[in-house]
Image (tube, rainbow, N blue to C red):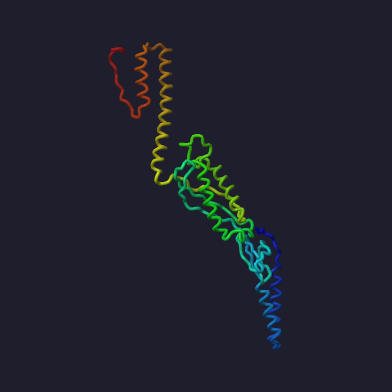
Length: 284
């Protein structure tokens, strides 16, 4: 596999000076009516002009001579290189790959929608051009494959898998780190470095979204009711203890059971209760 190697290039400004001299030589040949001098000057001008190249900041020129990779020039500016070499420009800037939403199955087989954004840049120009057919398409395909694989490793949440320590929904930081690591391993062949990778969209698939929402709501209701019941039991217990301590009223077991029942109805009921005034005796 080809690996990047740097190569030096002649200053383009020196080549421009030589080009001006050659143009002057060709004009002098025209002036003195010397066709040989004109032809030599014109060919030399074309030779020098063909080798001039401009490299913009954060760009690189990959040089290929007769099918052989001879090096990469990364320094920006005006340069002169071998005119016979093929010059291919490779951008070294950071780029975004915003993956589209994909429908995949999580660890438990539930269909989910997931998408991720990847920030990447070319690290090795030789691998990018010669190790894969199209490095931009390679990034796109491998990014989607990595997201699919990651979604299959974890459950969406821990409702069905209570022992899960990492889920797609709650373990965002760890999931993103694992995605970035896997992408770097996949794209190393193409000389690509992944700077950052993050999940940008995560949801249940449309066909089960309504059912999962109802399940989440039911779970929330059960948790809330459990908390209410625990609080109500504590209040009833405290009320019975205080009544007994203050000796405000003596209650037998039957009346205690009735009082507990009434208090739990009042405290745990979803609607406010209407008070009933008992004008008779406690036992009447």
